[in-house]
Image (cartoon, rainbow, N blue to C red; front, side):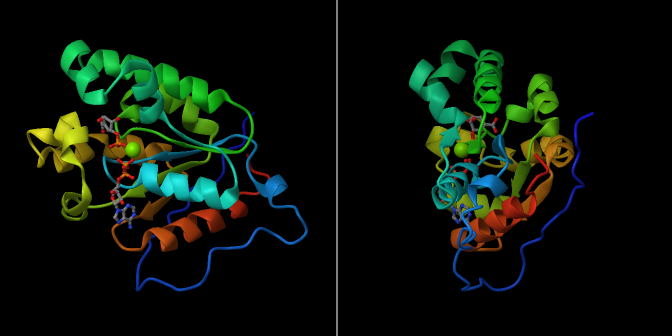
Length: 204
Ligand SMILES: Nc1ncnc2c1ncn2[C@@H]1O[C@H](COP(=O)(O)OP(=O)(O)O)[C@@H](O)[C@H]1O
Ligand SMILES: O=C(O)C1=C[C@@H](OP(=O)(O)O)[C@@H](O)[C@H](O)C1
Ligand SMILES: [Mg+2]
């Protein structure tokens, strides 16, 4: 039977802290304390999955994979895929890329697109993975989001909240832990996530 770690929600609150990023353990056990499989970032559009995922991977010294980037490399711009082939075809391509990247052995960070969990196959595969949900607010997103790259928001930025409410149950069911990216600096969030990953030692 697969091991199902208990869910824990970390609500980032309070002022940004100045503690440095956690150093890898001095006994050289850092790598052995990491999961031997993908650590997966999920969450709504522009919550920070790509940017925080990249930082966490760099700090841990493990590969970083962004499934949207993989799709763009193989199939061209996401806006073009949506416009010319439709969202259903995009989801099919996305599900294949996610399945392939998640199946690679060894510690690595895999950041998904915000709609990846709308595919049942992806939700099922992720049940036994350390899945980190990044959550934010429409207010915070509207300050930072690059609308040109996100076809679902481009013509209707207010769709962010409506889409989030539709998907929230899927995000919450998949998440083993949640971090708020609207309440902390990128460095602070990165540090908390790395702490959490090391706390998972031996679970995955
Ligand atoms: N505290 C924060 N955490 C994460 N992202 C932040 C934060 N503050 C600002 N941002 C910005 O928000 C945007 C998030 O975009 P991105 O990482 O592409 O999100 P996603 O991959 O979830 O769509 C980036 O431009 C990032 O620089
Ligand atoms: O939420 C979504 O349906 C989407 C999110 C995007 O990724 P980000 O969440 O990284 O912006 C990208 O996959 C595509 O535009 C569709
Ligand atoms: Mg992204």
